[in-house]
Each structure stands twice: as structure tokens, then as C-alpha cells.
Image 1 (tube, rainbow, N blue to C red):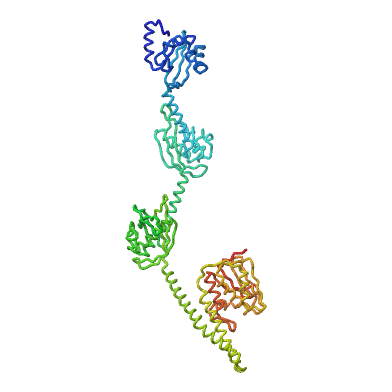
Image 2: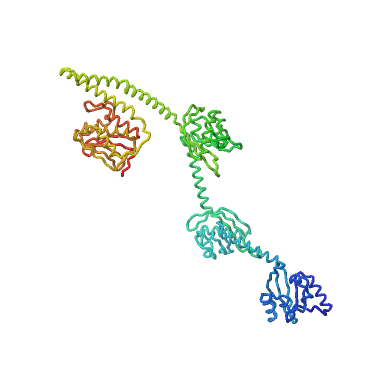
Length: 603
């Protein structure tokens, strides 16, 4: 096409070319411009009159050595159509460039493909995202053809079978699932394809004999012509969740059974956070304003208290128990919420069925970071508390008795002993024969007073204890007893947990008892058995079977001058430590006292 001497047909053609949206230029055999339409002027940023007759490489020297030159020269040399894409940075547009050779040279078309290129770019980005999503999701995604062969599986789908994706592709469900599961899958897939409809359900499938539970969504898979050519599916393995659900159901059933059959009173209290603040405490810290409402009582609670779930549900402690008692109960509930851990306390409640003392344990139930409910278990300890009160009264009387003995009886006894000692220095032989029995009687009275005080004060429950080496304790007690030629053998690598001062009375009495009954050359052994029993034994004559329980009774003695309180004191102190003591035979036939329940580690 020439830019001059154009005939009528050429003018018509030129006018048509000026109207198109593509840029069009014509080049002769020397790559000189013979025509440039208006759109090409915009694309090339040039004026037609200025470039007509000029060689392209002179007008645009920057094109030399580029794909543009390469394609133009190749099209001219081969006489074949060529095409390529070019980005115009000035216009920020992409063009599809097509080169058409003819006898007069080359015609070049520039088509704006920016929109298509942007779409392709976005499509590639979307594809990358979709591919990443499919490959990284925990849900199994797959595509099968009409014959049931897997055409695509993501990593999650392959993991279901313990395989890699490439080893699953091309296989059928018969090769992957147990026969029964494979048959069910095939039947469902054929129905989806035949009816051209989706299917969603929870299914149980077996892989190598192991049960799996899936949440399946299946869809007809279509080709570009919108024909159904297979199945596309998304499966979520919910096996672990189903197992948890089953365990939860079982636990719920167990909980219901425990809740309704427990002998203890059980109650549930809902916890709500008030909208307004609760003020500040004595330290200036902000207090939360909680509202507690009873939700449920178990049968034992209803039977014990006379309250019912229907009567208390949705009500506050103040509404159920009155202002004063309700406030006290609510305060304990608040302590549990603030502590966010179980608390236990005793409370005395006046209820429709009477006055009760309960040992109450409260446990918070935390949901989404807040205490939403309190579970309470209350045990009726009224009888125990009454027994403890009675025991305290008895102990008070016993302390009073011990005080009387200690002060009111010991003082005149000491006076009598002192006067008798003075008489002993001044009386004649005849009077001395009468005075010696008197002194012996006074000494026996003093021993009885000492043992009575010990019995009264050492039987109380032991509080704090300490770890005591058995060798050191036994040796100390042995040195405080008249042992004459007796021998002590103690297992050294043993310690016991107890009250040192009270245990001193135990070993002193047992050692004294062994010497009094076994003779001056008796051998006494102290140790620990393999099952943790601590023993004290001797090689003396032993204790008759008929007397083995009686020896612990107050006042029982088989030795002249004995008080009969020694072994009674031993048992009382053992009981105060929550131990038991029994009498048996030693390996050499002597007496053996065994203490069970002792915390006595070896080594």
C-alpha cells in the first residue's frame, strides 16, 4: 500500500483502515514505511507524514536486535505470516503483533490485548491460589472419571490411604477401600452421574480393615462442553471427631448415672457476669459483680434437703436460702470463680429438712476463657462434726483432769515424799521397817501420776511431724531406761515420720517392758520389714496368746509395782499417728510389737 497516487479503491480501503481499533503499518522490501494508520501513530508515537519513506530502523533504532526485528526479517525472508506479543511501556498496553508478507513488502497489525493479558495474569494468580489451597487444605479433594479412576487427588486425599498422590492417580476405589466400602462408593458415584445431581452425607468407610468416618460432598464433573464426565468430591475425615463425640456421649451417660445415683448431694450453678461493676475490695482492687443461679439438683440433694430442681432452677442463692445465708453461699461461689480452681469448705445450712453441716467442694467449669458454671458436691458431715465436737469436749475434760492431777494431786504427793524422806533420816530401826513400804507406795503413786498425765496428753491427734532416724531415736530412748546388761540392735538405714516427743514415750515403754519381762540380759531388736512394718522385738519369754489384747488395756500389768499404763500409752500414741499396733511372736520366741501404717522408707 502506497501513501501517494492512490486510486478510488485505495482511498476506500484507507478510510476503512483508519476506522479500525488496531494499529496498521505497511513496509516495503527495504522496511521503509509506506502506510501508517491513525491508531498506529498513537501506538508508535509518530506522525505518518514524518515517517513515510523512512526505514524503520532509522526511525526506531531501539527496535534493532529485538523480537520485533527478528520477526519482521523472518517473515520477509520466508514469506510466511508471523505473530508475537509486545508491551508498549509508554502506553502501558500489550499488543498482539501480526505480520503479513505480500509482493510489495509487509503489512503489520497491532491489536490491543491488554485486557486479555490482565485476565490471563489474574487467572494465573487465581490458579496459583487455588492450587495452593487445594494442596494445603486438610480436606481430601479428588476427581474421578466415569469408570471410577482417580484423575486427580490432593495431598490430603492421598494421606487417607497412606500414599503419595501419584500412586493414587489411575487407581479405582476397589484398589483402595475394603470391598464393601468400594461397592457402596461405586453405586453412589453412578447415581450422581446418571442423575446429574450432587450428594452430601456422612459415610463410614473401611481402609485396610480400619473404620473411617467421612463427611462427603460429591458433584458431577463436567468437561468444556458441559458434559458430565466423572465425579468431583471433597471429603473431610471426621473419624477423630466422631470418636470424641462417642466418648463424650459415653461420659455424658456416665455423668448422668453418677449425678443421679451418687450418695452425695450434687448441684449445678450457672455463673453470669453482671453489667455493673462490683466495687473495690479492701485493697482497692476491682471486684467483679457475678450473678449465680441454680440450674439443677441431683436426687440425693433433693431427698436430703427437701429442695427440688423445679423449685430452685433459675433462682439466686438469696431467693432460695434467704438474704443472710444466701449472701454467705454466694460469697463462696464467688471465691471459686475468682480462684478458677476447686475449693473445699464446711458450711452449716438451715434447710427445709433440718439443719445440716456440709463439707462442700466447688469446681469451676471454664468455657471460652470464663467460668460459666460451678459444679458443687456436698457431703453431709453433720454426724462427724458432732463427734468432733464431742471429742473436743472430752479432750477439754481430760485436760481438766490432767490439770487436777498435775497441780492438786502432785503437790501434796511431793509434800508427803519430802516429809517421809526427812523421817527416814531420824527414825529408829523399828520405825524404818514401817517407813520403807510408805516410801515405796509414794513412789508408785508418783509413777501412776506420770503415766496418767502421759496417757491423757499423748493420745491426741498428731499435727506436724518430722523425719526421724530410727537408730538415733531408739538409742536416745535406750539410754533413758534401766537396761542393766540388756542389748539393743537397731536397723540403721530406716527413718520414720512422726512426733519425736511422743514417739520417745513409745520406745521407752517398750524397752522398759522388754527388760522387765525378759530379764537383765535380754536382747531387743528394732527394724523394718520389706512391706513397711516397723517392729520392736525381744528374745524373752513372750506374751501368751490369751493376754495379747489385754496387755493394751489400762491398768493391766504382770509385773509387781507396774502401773499397767505403759502399753496403753503405746497404743494411744500409735493411734494418734494413724498407725495400728499388734503383738506377735519374735523369731526367738519373745514378744514382738508391730506397727503398721508407718511412713518408714528404707535407705
